[in-house]
Each structure stands twice: as structure tokens, then as C-alpha cells.
Length: 314
Image 1: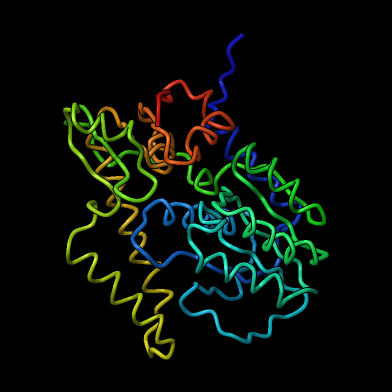
Image 2: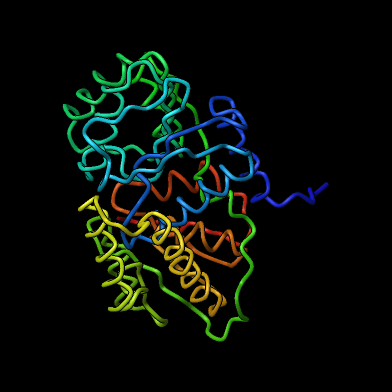
């Protein structure tokens, strides 16, 4: 007998595993939230904030990689919670360095790293991270796919490693802002993670092309850069965190509006896929350069009828 429960309801419910280490009502510091134009990270942030709100988790302070101070006194009974995503490893060193600094500098705090995908080009860098992490006695790492879980469990043998969906699933369901007027949106990567398979599709494709970088216009990018600059200076009289919170509501809303205009989405962006699923929109997913998308699909979203993975050569 077919279940009436939507697979996305199941995935949202599976995020409750995080409550085992951040219990409802906890006081936390939320660190490394994104201040840039990658809409996937913004979706993760909005899902994370929704999770905190839904379970009465009290955020006492927020810091990004731009404004985290060298020395910060955090009350002993506050949990340090690090933003999730796909930047764990040696591709995005600024975020990884901050993560490692916090684990090294706060040995007596509970530290929770929200769901991440792990990828290292250099095994020596992975070993270096492991050396730092394995010294901590209350470190909890959530990962988004079975491959990340396997490699993290082998390297980080002194810490707790768990499997969890991406935090953006807390936003389910997202209602479309309009009825679709066009057939197909290609939401394709334009960065270091694109593949040959994607390039071949781009040559033969018939549809509109978009990425996070082209979703936002010149004025919006300028506004993002101004906020980044103000946060980096750190002594701005304006409440930059609150301004960024409101502005990212607008930026995520723009993505939802654009996706609403199409019947189907084909994407090589993991959060192009997740956003489509959050909107219950038919979508096909291409892999990225190191298997992040396919690993996520096989771990979590393969049971969603409206979603498919395009299997092919990278």
C-alpha cells in the first residue's frame, strides 16, 4: 500500500536527529553563517534559522567568517553551532580555517557542525583537520551523504559523526509565487565544480540558463558587496546582521519567484535540486565535479517522484 506521507515530510522530520545534541530551549552561538551571493548557502541559512525557531533554540550571537573576532569569550553553557553546507575540506580554506580555529580554541564547549559534505583534494589536509578534531571531547559532526559519513567516521575516530539531510529541508513546503509560464529552466553551475556532461548539455539545450551568479542583478550584487564590506570593517553603527537577514529574505524570495515561472528544472546545483523539491517541482539533477550531487540524491532524494538523477560521464 502506498504511503500518503510525502518523502519531503520524512526528510524534514529526520532533521530532528540534531535535537539529540542541541536540545529544544538551548542557548547557542551560530557561527559561519553565509554573507555572499550563493543562494544555496542562503537556503541552508534560512532552513537553519527556521529549525532554531521551530524548536525554541535561542541564538545569543551570530558571527560570519567576516566578523568572527580573534578572541571571543563564549559562556561555558552555550553550544557553539557551525553552519552546514558543502565547504568542509580544502576547496574553501577560509571557512575550514575558521572551523578548525573554533574546535582548537574552545576545547571545553559542546561544538556542533551542521550537515556538511566533505571533500579534500589532499589527504594530508584531511589528516591535519583530523589531528585538530580528534583532540576535542564534545564535538558533533553531521554530514549530508553516506560517502562523507564513511570517510569522516574513519578519520574522526574520537568525535561523534551522524548522517542527516541538508538544513534547507526545514523550509518544506515552499509555495510557488506564480503559475509556470515557461517549460524548462537550466540552473547550471558556472564555477570550479561544473562537469563535461553539463558542458555537452549546454551546447544542445533549449531553455533559459541561470546560476546564482546570474540570478541577482548588478544592483543586488553591489548591495551584497556593500554589506560584506561593512561586516568586514566590524565597527559599523548600523545593525548589519539584521539588515543582511532581511535582505536575504528578499534574495531567497527572488529565487523562489524565478523557479515558480517554469514547469521543469534541470540543474547541476545541489540547492537548485533541493529548492525544486521544496517547491514540489519536477527536476532533473546533474552531478558536480566530485560527486556531491549524486551522493546526496542516492542518500536522500531518490524516493521523490518528481526528481531524477541524470547518470552519465563527468
